Image (cartoon, rainbow, N blue to C red; front, side, top):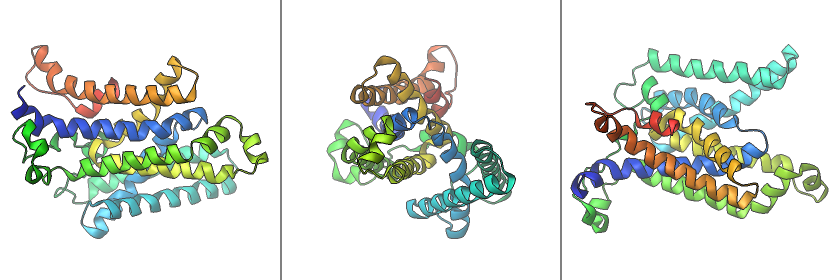
Length: 285
């Protein structure tokens, strides 16, 4: 494929997929080590009804209404989990399972029963995202990377994911020491005066931010996979945290890039006529 075809059709979707994968993988390292890896799965279940309700109220799928809706859904889920745990006298894990699956089912039901046809918001996009549609229409080739007019036409999802990825990286860098200590020895962290509960909540909040930002572009499948798979693979390579984080970024980048290429061209190489879902292939890789 020439640059005139690759840049407008494949460059931005691939970059968005890579940035989304990295944004989820970075906090995923600490969630994995804290044995909270499924929080990414939980977040992707919880935010769906909030995002749908935010769209129904505002009529738009811009960033802030989606973030507010997702945050409200997360708060409601916490209250429901606590209420079910206390009133039903059951384990927290069982309460979380009830709430997460119920809220996700409610979100899917809202999508099916309401008119969201005017935007990319339906069950398919909730699961698979719309990565293939995030093309750069104003690009004419590699020279467009230096053209201010063409750059102004970049998909908004690319800017959003780049800023989100940067914010996550800054958070990890600034709070590296307290995150590291509280992850490996929570008791010692409390003794030296660290507010471990606040650190844990901040990590979950950053994870939720990454999940919400990535949700519209890449769907819940990649969000779930990238919170767990790159950090888990990196953990098999090394037992040093710095190296693990570095390897997780490498694996996330390879998964997103290679998965997108295989989704688009793999079937053609095998004699097929159509491509397959980029999100599904990225999660598979």
